[in-house]
Amino acid sequence: MYQEYWGLSKKPFPYRTAAAELYPSQSLRGASLRLQYCFRNNGGAALLIGQSGVGKSSVLRRLAEDDVTLRPFAHIVYPTLSCAELQRVVAAEVLETTSVDTQDSPDTIFAELRKSLRRHTAEHRHPVVVFDEAHLLTNDALNQVVLPLLSVADMDATLSLTIVLSGQPSLAAHVARNAQLRDRVAVTATMDGFTESEITEYIHVSMTAAGAQQSIFAADAIQAISRLSAGNPRRVKRLCDMALLVGYADRLSEVTASDIESLAAEILPAAA
Image (cartoon, rainbow, N blue to C red; front, side, top):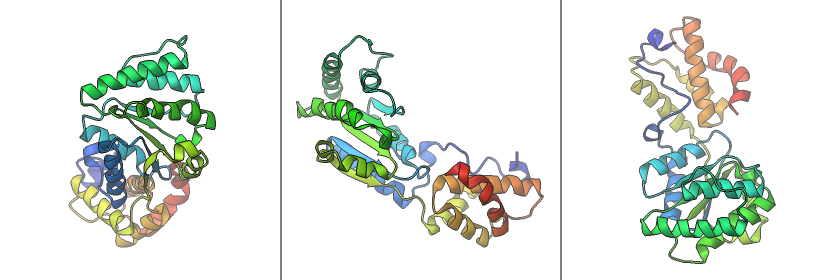
């Protein structure tokens, strides 16, 4: 809508970004390195911790796209399912089938999972099971789904499997209270978002890639974005995108700090 007004060839701050186009922030690189280390060394479990919007899902998506041996890459996004339902969802992903018989017992499901892991390992694949919003997993889910999965792999040292628990900072304390699970965490990756200098570079790189021929965000606008977003990438993108839209509507020649501040109260609660 606003691209032509600002002389842009595309939206510089899309809501969804291709993995290959993710901005390589220090936080993203650090988390990627730790998770890659865990995968390559067949670490049983990893924690990926950060506030909503810092890019946890983006890191996982990029790792999955960059390394085709990380298959199947199961992304479980229903943390509040019952234990039985979670077991079936995980099994369907690892077995690469559409569903698992609701009559199958946990013993049957985990026996099938073991067979599937043997097959994947023989094909030089490394299965990854990600539990998103893992801070919402109940203790029963940790004990009846996550730990048994780890035990399946532990029964045969040749099997490949990594479980990633991805969630908000409270996840660390949640796992710490479970001694069996805590002792099996090989890697903890924490994401903090963008630094102030990264926000400046990110905005410049994104605008240039979108075809900007002039500086649209004033220096004080970038400072306001940094302060009001607290470095949260999702908030940075939302502020920048809406600032360009409002600037187009108001026929501005550039975006200033006052423009960003007037937007913040309106959109940051929704972006948090």
